[in-house]
Image (cartoon, rainbow, N blue to C red; front, top):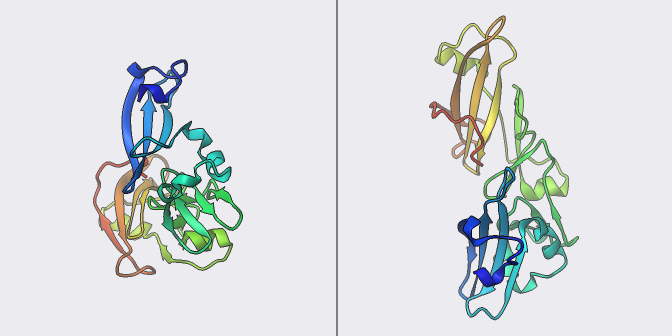
Length: 230
């Protein structure tokens, strides 16, 4: 592993972890993390054949450029993790979506949130304060195709949850924050403002979309989750 990296760029003593991104019969991809002086780790991707005949190493910031330039064409089976349709593919180790028609990597808008498997997009799900009203989830291919076909739509039952947990009286400033999002489940934290000032309570809420996409089941269980686990 030491020979793969520029000795002037990284130090083996700073090696934090090695994560397996993807494995096939004759090749594999790794994410190698090194501690640095900044707030985030330095992450390098390593793509190689199992006989070491073809090895590509690069910083994670260069991933998109490597894909669109065709530098990773021999490892395409490792990169294109999931085929959404004939045009769009989920990219391994990235929140980007590869557009085969335009040969570019696409990302959702800043206020939107892509699911952990890359197959769905929660419209405005990345906002810190999600307010009441219709919540919309689209399939990723529909989102990037620019149509308005929804996979799921539902309302967040702020008042029902508050009543169940006796978080009353409350104001109209209550909100949710999205912590986890997949095909079947969504995890929020609900926060309730008091009628005049301060807060009246908070809890985690789990949404189960398996039986109904328009009238899902809500479970109230406070795990103490307050930061993103996506």
